[in-house]
Length: 186
Image (cartoon, rainbow, N blue to C red):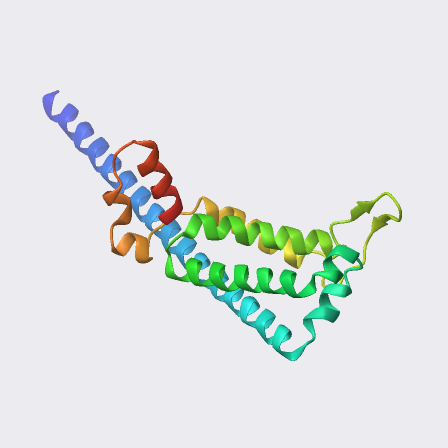
């Protein structure tokens, strides 16, 4: 009886080892996938930011923003163009580098939501004109990109400068200051 019990115990032990190994492997792949997604969409956003600077330099940004049909945006087209260009450029660099990932993902999601809403595809409601569906692009691209950035807010910080320099470990206490810095930097 003792041998039968020890054989069963060994089998259970092997099963537990295999399960924990598979769990670690799956977790490792998820971290790799999310890090690759962060880098890829950071590159896409950086390219979008560079495109905004080219549009400003060519003088076509004014027409793009005036196409939205909102007087406030049209009157301040240069400021809006510079803010969006700066946000997209810095957001792309931060996401690709893996430093300030969460704030970059938050402001990138906010930029894409704003573009989706003011582009008319979100159906912005105005009291004077009703629902506005001006639209300048496909109906879901900006919204989908915004949702990707929302996922990246909660993605692990591996394979970036923050993990390379062990920033999270440097702010390891549970003080409000350290928790805030961990959130902002990693």
